[in-house]
Length: 219
Ligand SMILES: [Zn+2]
Image 1 (cartoon, protein in one colour):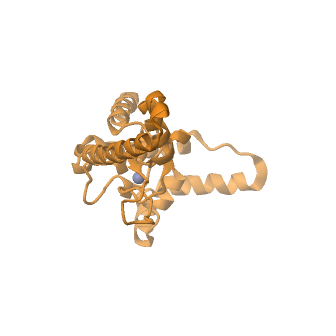
Image 2 (cartoon, rainbow, N blue to C red):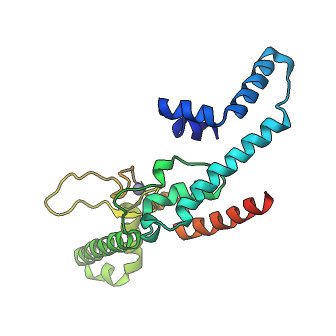
């Protein structure tokens, strides 16, 4: 909650003052408890302060959930950059508001289909080359699936944040090319190294909707 506030609403000086005025009671009660707690008396936070912070958290979380559940354009196109923040939100944490309001939404399904088609095209060419280079007696005993798996292990990468695949083989005529996620620009990792990938946006949205219902029922 505190990290969210300092990265978002309290990050800009003008907003900070306004936020303080809008939540003056909570600020004053928290500051007064903190002044006592600092003296080392181990004073626990009053329940009124705790429940006010919980209410504020629910308000911020619900507002973020509504941004995604309202189905803005980035949600409609399953923009891969939403995967990570949606997963964090589904787990009950808050995210940077800017990560939910994406400009120029990317069509996630098209990006994944295109990346896999490119990967499969390059893999098919590499496997054909490898088979052609083998002596006939070994060619007959070599399983295409094994060559494909070996190719995937070497050349199939993924963005750990967007879960978008990428083939790292340099295009013909390029000895060096930058290997970064085409959606978020982040560093890619080999899929064979089993990175922890965020769930699909649809899965996270389902969990967010269920959590939102539970939170509003509790009020
Ligand atoms: Zn990415």
